[in-house]
Image 1 (cartoon, rainbow, N blue to C red):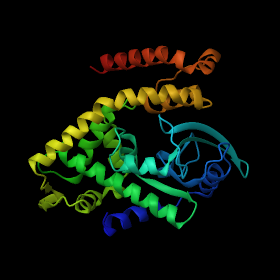
Image 2: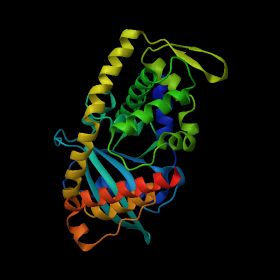
Image 3: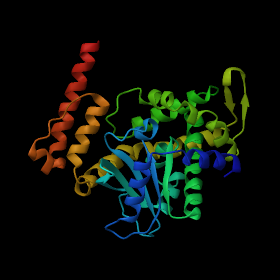
Length: 307
């Protein structure tokens, strides 16, 4: 990976986060029930952009343990109070080696590189070596995302055209509740983050391009390489929804407060309120089909009203 891309990623990961978030990250890394040694904690999501402590904070905890669960990451929910301020977090835990392999595109999973080409902050690290390993892995996320973006995007276009094609494809491949057009909101909310990132990520892996007027680029991607990338993507697209469903089912057994979190997430992204009955809280998996049916009916009714 080139120094330019890694330098850009290192600066992005070093972005400032609030004292409560940094303290919560340290607490999550150093007060663990499983005793697995932690290399780093990444903070991401809308709260990173806004600085708000409302809702649920999103963290990835990367361990140095060589063990890894068959279905990763392990998701858990945590509540903690910092100087009288109540904080809540959704925490995904996996080992750094698996994270790095997924970032390179070596796994069928798409969530790591699609998530961490977007903004994140290194909120806690065990030492400088751990931080350097995270920078390298997140740089690989940008490279993996960039080469798929130019394979999926137009023959020539602006960097935003390519990122839009990428996020439209990855969101469609996953089992998500976000509204259509989510890719536009990602780009509009994070223009500074994506500005200049695509050219650096392409050059880092030897993909050259011509520059035109109005920020238009024309990647020099041979037809054979494009076809290989599209075959690589088709395998991952086919597995996107099955993997997401499997992870949701697993999370329901490890994610304390899973039903409350799911209801909050659905309302936040769709505006549809899911009533939480005691039965739904005790049996989130059994309740899921009914909730999803209600969500589908509400979306269908909204679409008819808008027509």
